[in-house]
Length: 445
Image 1 (cartoon, helix red, strand yellow):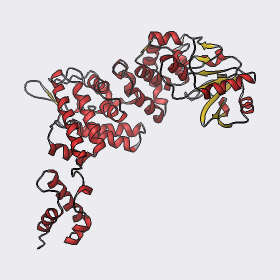
Image 2 (cartoon, rainbow, N blue to C red):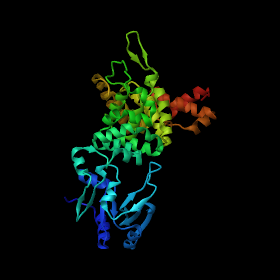
Image 3 (cartoon, one colour):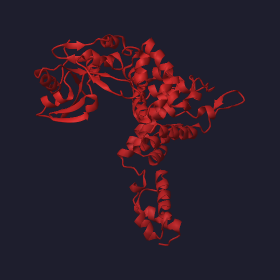
Image 4 (spheres, one colour):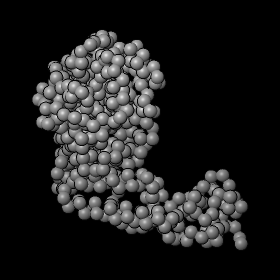
């Protein structure tokens, strides 16, 4: 087997080999190469200890990025490569990093400490593929399997539980039986993992190729990090628009939307308040009045606890709060939404609404066509530079000051003018706007 490696990668390997050391690309880059995907980066493992690595690369810039764990970063032609010594890990008392590492002369030792078989492969242009744990076979079988005993691997670093689910979603793979059993059994260890590490893996999981199977098969695991979803699991909606329970609907909406992290995060949480809003009519049909506001409030709390950035939290809450509006392809409606949300959030909301409706009964697909028409209308409005925000008005705050407005009243009258223009009650023309503002302030010509 021959993999085509970038020249800078080959240069690092060749320099190490010329100085008498072994060197391989290792981990995710090998997996991605075998899958025909372009690796994001290339990590290199070697029999050389850090001092030896620094010596052989004395003509290059070398940074001690993780010297305690055997890692240095080598810069070759402006590109950085992590070069790490073969090692064995000590105990993981904090369930994150080994308390100590022991450098080894064995590549197999180094591969044995890795999480999954598909990440426990190494490649050298002369030696070929090193695959002592059957990672290539698991790639072929589309399986996620732990290296060695799953409970031991997850006990070392509980984040591997989320990584297993993330890889399953990202690659469209299944967890093997032993790994899946251990994920369910050891899920509570995720409570010991920092929110920042959890949120990163959750975002990657949501934007994977096949998140539906992961979110539904491992809903109990997701509920450990987001306990608020527990009431949604198996919650019957008693509603003719829905064929799924609340959580299955949310998972389907995620999977049937564009793989944008803001869209998918909002869709995972968009109905999280529904179990607390159910009202049945006399015929037993379920209604969820106000669920969008409650869901937005709950989502804000969830995302704040998971340490998402403030702008992500605010955006998710906004998208959830507006996701339940009725799609109408009308220029006035679209202009008002553009004005309220802003261009970027408007188009994200349309994607949220499409994902939501694709996860309902088939007759709701008609709404998707209306939403697509609204997107086209919005593009037209933007392309024509129509007035949708205060800065688009043909007058500004200085004009209102000259008319006699002051303080908060300046902003208030500009808001009134904007609404009148959006609703086509006034043209966006300076004299017409000034005349209206004078009349409102009772100022004579």
